[in-house]
Each structure stands twice: as structure tokens, then as C-alpha cells.
Length: 290
Image (cartoon, rainbow, N blue to C red; front, side):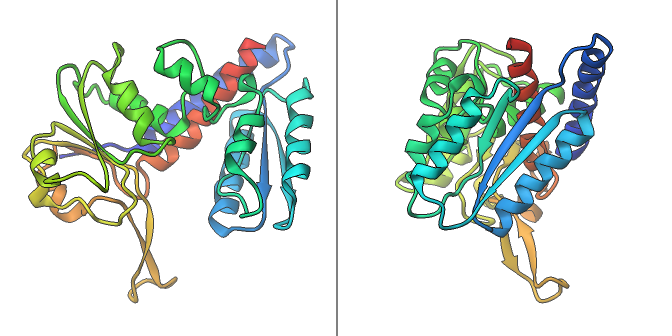
């Protein structure tokens, strides 16, 4: 069994990006600039955004963090987005999700200039992805594809089961893995909360991408020998033995599934670090396009 080390791989990608930035600096060119909007003080969101700002500094990007209070109106947020859309010094930006209840998340995503949508969530970029045209890929699926490529995992003709149909992970993964590309050419099945006989389906899978949002849902009796496991989930599970009172768990029951897997991502340290690395890669792409 081989661990798909997202932390190590993401560090390699960051080093490659930093080399690109250094080359820009030597040519006297402007370095990439990533902005982020954070509404409210959700703990997980603050942690993610701060990690992104820290990653920007590491690779030599400029970064801007716009922090807005929880009571921010939809109109005020859309105004901030418009400011970033028209700011020529900003190459790409993200609006950290989730948003407070008074703000329409879809309206916000639609308001972002597709050319600066480095999260890859805008319908224009999703459509371009579906048509296999150059675009910004959603960062988490992009990171998974990169892991599969760099570990040279054979996907052509393989049976892939994607657990979950979210617009952020499940749907994009099903599209990307079925396309003619590296880490593609697979036969893809998408399962979700309404799927019947789930274990019968997962037992036939050569590769499973678990993004169903239920901690430790996929167990060893649901997979076959030598399966490749990509665990996208991350949940705080109460654990009295831990100082902070919880441990982090994925959608996969690691102990039982890892005994059968040929490759598996850990939680934490698997898909998570790759997401930030690919956000940086998208931002570099946005700067090169401009």
C-alpha cells in the first residue's frame, strides 16, 4: 500500500510555481496577485483563507485579503466583487464559501469575472471544462488529477466510482476522469444518497473518489483488493483522547480500507494541501494569460 502524499506533492508544485515567479521577477515582470474575500468569522473558513495567504507568500505571489463582517449585505459584497473584477492589478480572486444566509451564493459566483475565477466555479469555466477547452479547473478535482498523474496511476479503461455529485468535487471529477487526458479515459459511475446497492457498485471499482460528506462511510467490506482510494472528506470527530477533543476523519474508514488499497490518500495530508497548490497554479495561469 502506497500513501498518496498530498503534502509532499503540493510542496513540489509550490516549488515549481516559485521558480516561475522568480523567472518573472528576473525579467522585471509583475508577479501574480491573488485576492480573497472572507465574509464573517467562520473558524474553518478563516483557517483555509489564512493558509492560502501563507501559500501566496511562500511562492512569491502578492495577496490581498478582504475581510467583511457577518452582517454584510449581498449588495455590498457584489460591489467588492466588481471592484476586484475591474482592478487590473488583481489576476484572480476567490470568495470563500460558505456565505451567510442573507447572501445568494449562486448570484455571487455568477458575478465573478470568469477570467479571474481561479476557483473554477463560474458556469463559463464549468462549461469550458465540460467541453475539454482551456480553462480554470476547480481546485480540488484539479489537485486529485495531479496526484493521479504524478503517482503514475493507470486510469485508462479503469472503473472509477465517484461518491458524491456536488458541483465542487463530484460532478467535475466525473467529467475530468471520463475525458481523453492523463488520468482520464476511465469508465465513470457517480453514486449519491439515492443510489441503491451501493456496496455492489463500489466493490467493482478500480478507483474510488469519496466525496460524500459522511465521516468514515466507506469501509473495507465495500472495496476490492488493490483499489485506489482518493478521500476528499474531512470531518471533526469527537475524540476524548485528543487534547482539542476531536480528530480529523475522512469519508473513508482508513484502518479497514487501507488493508486492501494499493494507493490511498490520508486525512489530513492528502487532497487538502493539493487544493491550495492548484489554486496557486490557476492564479499563475491567470497572470500568464494577462
